[in-house]
Length: 219
Length: 219
DNA sequence: CCAGCCATTATTGGATCCAATATGCCTATA
DNA sequence: TATAGGCATATTGGATCCAATAATGGCTGG
Image 1 (tube, chains in turn purple, blue, cyan, green):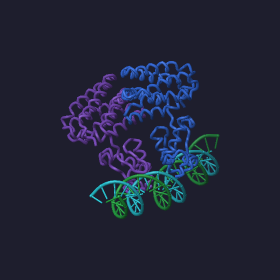
Image 2: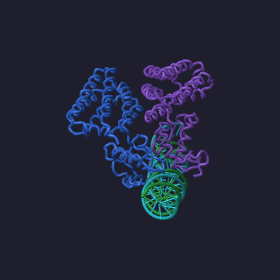
Image 3: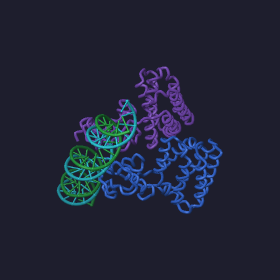
Image 4: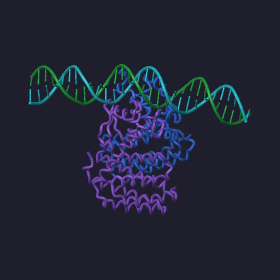
């Protein structure tokens, strides 16, 4: 009731979505404590739906809840972040393989446009946004919803560190990524499963190794 | 307060643990609807902690929540179950690799004992229990908690179908599994990463293909 | 001056009550 | 007779209140 804005009908979901957005855009850095009452007040609701929302975000790995103590924005160590990337290396090629055959012409056009936008993007926030959009778009053909959700969670939990790392790199530090995107898109277009999988694996792996060179990104 | 039994101090966690146990042991088959009030009464609590518990189990993939409607024991289609297995094929070898070097003598002894127990086990429930124990024990060396949790979730969500499928097989249908367990253990003992990974991959993959031959297991 | 203990306070967890939504049945009508 | 609409009921979602727990700061004694 009195939802006001968009009209999603569930307070707890609305709060969860809002917080998720705030976390992913970097409004709350990892390690930040979040109090139930603050959020409740902020969304004009009581603490009940806030607690539900906290649990949802906990499930997504974005919040870390400690019983009787509080909620913090999840924080990854370098080792944990590398772990997430290693999982991505193994799992995303699988997702790509099931998605590739079902990507239609319209999607392919959009993917090409995104690669171009990526090359032209000057600021970090744009790069992050479009990079994410590009990769997730290569997965839309997949009918494997569970795997898709898992991959999205992996992206979400590592988002903050990807941003911090990207900030460190100069814009011309993205060259390898651009090349890899081109190669990936080409392999997809040719329908070459094996090649696409290998390129994607290498893309994620290279990023992991680069990231590991910047431990200062982590707490 | 008045926790009575073991004395974990948090009603919601206690309820979640209890429900989880009940689901994994097959007390509630997939598709069963669960009402908040029933559970609340059953645990002598109010609906608030039950709702929290539901969210936790939702996060584990054991419950499926639909807003304003209710909670059901999660159900997988054959395709979704195969999806989970394919993820396992790719992810568990990774976990094994990080665990292998850190398995001590005591653990190895226990693993040997479990393989033996598995070969001797006559009833399905015992087989399931020890098979799970065996594989998860090969992972205890891993310091990668996030990956470990993920794998455990994968086991949990497919538990019911593993049980149903295992029931169909005669006890002598486990031969391949036994052989694979022996081979896996041997590779671990030799410290042969590559071999261990490949055997484990094949073990999971074979099970997936076997499972796919029994679509009657699914709703 | 520092360490340890105790009380106070801020914050989360749980219970109860009320509101909103969905489901099923029943009736009226084409 | 079949179908659409609306009403009654069961169930979930949210708000408010109270209890329990953990962190904080001050106090006291060594």
